[in-house]
Length: 240
Length: 293
Image (cartoon, rainbow over all chains, first blue to last red; front, top):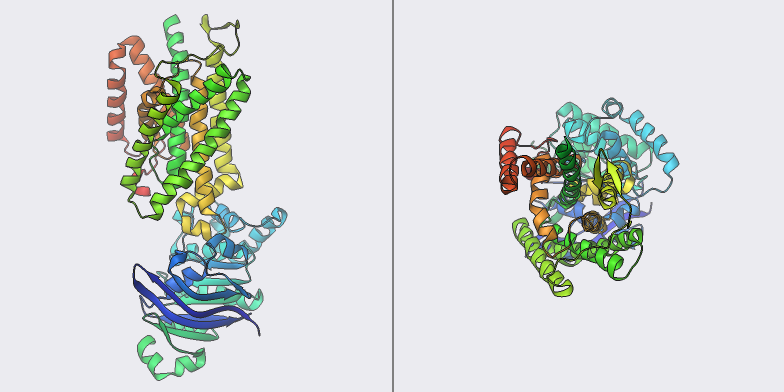
């Protein structure tokens, strides 16, 4: 297995605050990996910085994607390299329709002919979106928005998707559905997945490996089975 | 009846000019959530540039219009890249950026006086000798060009913003810059392009109405406030609303001048605006203005 994404002694600080204090991790091609931890541990900062959505001045260390250093690149260039991001809070274009949101997902693609077929494919994967095709983004439910955010990221044919808190604000039954969709993308489409999740239980049930982050540092890592059996993890994150 | 037709024609001309200015406010608001109070003075520049290319340099009118638009597009792009983006980068609050717009407006206004002088300039007639009769009224061909091209620009812009990929990206970038960047939109470039486009529209307004009104350093400033009111009336940030609001202001102003007195034209226009906002705070097109940013 080759490394898809590597962080080497990655640090991030803004305004003198060290949000991430030197973490290293590696995600291999085809894997599904989670990063869990409490609020404010630096998870979202890590995700956003990988995808070029934070101010690059704050970055130290290396972010390597498919063998290239990307820590100084802006977001749209990273997306162009096949690394897509499903941002925390979904960030659907509120005044564009579901269909237009999907088209925006294909913004960088040159093969205009195939975009229509890909939209059909997304509607097949997420039938709820087909029903809401002409609705504005702001009129969707939280679950529908999350599906749309994932589908929109898929429209760019990414090799890897980062998801930030996909379960945030969703009803438990919808959470299960969202994670089923994420696993399906990994297993059937071969997309490498790295996600941040506060719901540690579902995270450890869905991923293969996991990293546990605490106040800007990685404290434990390993396979999800090991993490689920780890006494400290069980106590701190699984509420047992 | 003759009076009504005359007023109707001048209201349409004024309304279209307001419409274009309102549209340029809306474009910037839509694309970067900002109040572009510098725009009216950019309109003055558009008119002066047009005057330079057409009357002073003797280029054909359509070429003069195109050249003006190109130069002003670059100017808008430069303002975004050079001033606005730097202010945003330094975390200047939106209110101060708005004040900067006023400041730039005054700078441009005074520069235009420095370069072109304070005497109002008159365009050469575009189609000399042509006389057009409309419902028994003689109409300047310049007026017809102004209204026709304004309507064309409005239609093209509407098409561009709603039906093309780049236009949709501009709207998307204004709704959610982070999401736009994450789907691959170069948000920084797109904001520059939006400013350029807005400046082009307002410069077009300048060069189109220049041959009808005379061109002076306060051309834009005189029209700008009322056009801003038009944009608010229509629902600030809404493009169709901007056009309707601008036209409405033109009609109210002209008809009040014609039937009551020109002393009351601004008074009544602004009272109508305020009363209208009491009844429909979101404007004609129901845009949830300001708090929407």
